[in-house]
Image 1 (cartoon, rainbow, N blue to C red):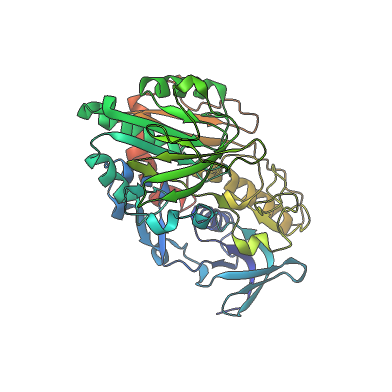
Image 2: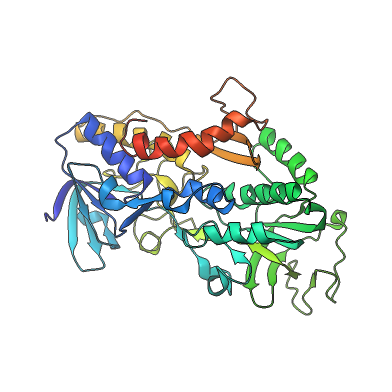
Length: 424
């Protein structure tokens, strides 16, 4: 295997393979290496559907070797260090690879250990997460067998991939329990680090109605710190207790939760909530090998790659580009964002190779398909300014059946057959 590549891509997920495929379509003689240690490639957007009992988990995974673009070299290694001043990447094995141009897109890191007890209780004690291939099927098992009680759905304070996923599964669970006739026996809580249900006003108005319909208790600005599966408790920090939710909080545990005694610091109250079912989402950040590298944004505590948010080019290293979930671009971290970022990276990278100035611009476009019930979905599309960017000639803020078909049937097919191959 060669140790030098004209273009070295770090990450063999959606972003890396899309960029590699599109580059070769435009210029088929490029020498491209793709560094990724994973044997498997996952279509993660379907894991919510797996957790809702309507998608087969094995249909979300393929062998990485079967999706790596032809005429590229797969380097099955894990990156340990970036040395951009030397145009070099060092792997955990000790092997070093040099490049003329670097594309960084290894995705995002799931920080399971940032929530005490979460990793240990996943997949048992009625605690699950659709952010795990291994545990998404257990989410459905929990929902299907739920007889009523307190159901908790969490969303961390950090940016996450597919920002809608923490509440998508909540709406589908509520709809399932409604159809089953037990919704009135369910006390549903959404504990979110965000300060609103959605950042775009037009779509948020729809979701507020959905929350009201299912009688969901929301806790905004809350940071989940611990989940104790055996004790069936979740702990979180919050500045305010919303008195409008008919929640009685005192130093003594109420029916389902209370303020933890002697645990208030500054304006933060530490709250403990008892649950019967918990779907948890871990905090997320850039992979450690980016956090500890010269590529990181020094102002960003989560360690994302520092890029120009429009050109996707690194702010300090001209021959480095990045895209996908690992960057500091202030957009939602979704596959839809990658689909719009990839052509920008490709065009601007090829321009630099030809000693030209890249002019392609990414406007922050992202899309979040949010099912509000089985058979109906709201497709939220927007840009950096949180302005709706609706593709279809309908009001996409209103959930409908056609968008459900798009999410459950069309997008999975497009991913495997067109997006990874650079033709969509």
